[in-house]
Image 1: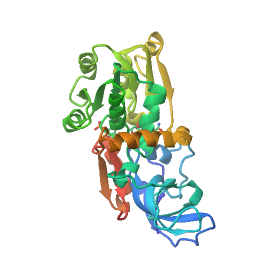
Image 2 (image 1 turned 180 degrees about the horizontal axis):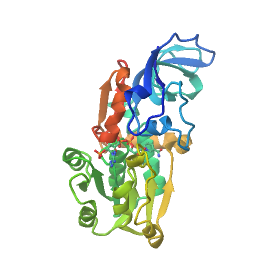
Image 3 (image 1 turned 135 degrees about the horizontal axis):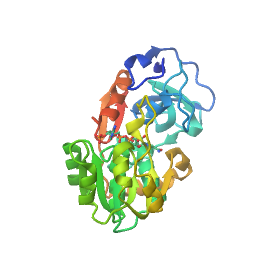
Length: 334
Ligand code: NDP
């Protein structure tokens, strides 16, 4: 069994030497466990946080330990009556390995959904879809006619946020880093307007595309983009604070937003959240998202990198913006 082991805490961008692919014999499966062959490994911006020793929502991955990651796989051996060999399962938090031995009671056995590919469980009906759904619906509280702005809009979470907001009858403006991504958002995902932050003046573009101000800022990025949005929020606006990817590789303290006072003046609700807080309500989120998916109201893309051996090098795609939609590593065949 091959596993990626964390050898050192990255400084700035992750370097290949920060991890090592190590081969080892697997112990016998313990009672209650299942052995899962990884098919798709989820690569997420938060992997970078787990590699660091910053105070976060989970303990850091230990130096010398297998890298933590979410996965989808097939059960090849079972010592748990509830899970049959051959079942496709989500392993929750497991490791960057060909095989993981996990508690059979902790895996999610995936039902077959007509017309829905397996990769959807990594995207719209997986953890990133649940992040979008609960962050927007629970914290954002969208109402028809309101204006929603979402950053990292063409990514796994952002692309779902915008489409859910459209279903709720909102006007949706997405911020993304290329013209191709912006075209996809408008033409395929139904966003009303987009801003290419690498080419456009974000403040001026927000003024143009949000003539009635901004009611919800679904924040994925932080930094100057967030600052420009905060400066244009409406009274009683909401800001689900989902992520701050622009600072995850920072080596120096990051200054706060210049427009911070506007959160007070506009009485904005800002709430940080982590999707695992909603775990007990995932069934509700999956039901809503799978219904919209099967009705064709939600489209999604998966950015698939082949080979477990390419996992660390591929993480960079999230920080350089090479991915459209959900980034996964395919470790073995479906
Ligand atoms: P994405 O698929 O959105 O990939 C990350 C994207 O972020 C890139 O494609 C890139 O797109 C954009 N980006 C990267 N660096 C910058 C930068 N410096 N400035 C602006 N944009 C940048 O990843 P996810 O959907 O998985 O995650 C999106 C955000 O949501 C992250 O902040 C992540 O940490 C957070 N998250 C939070 C969760 C929670 O429970 N709170 C759960 C899951 C994700 P572009 O080309 O547009 O620059």
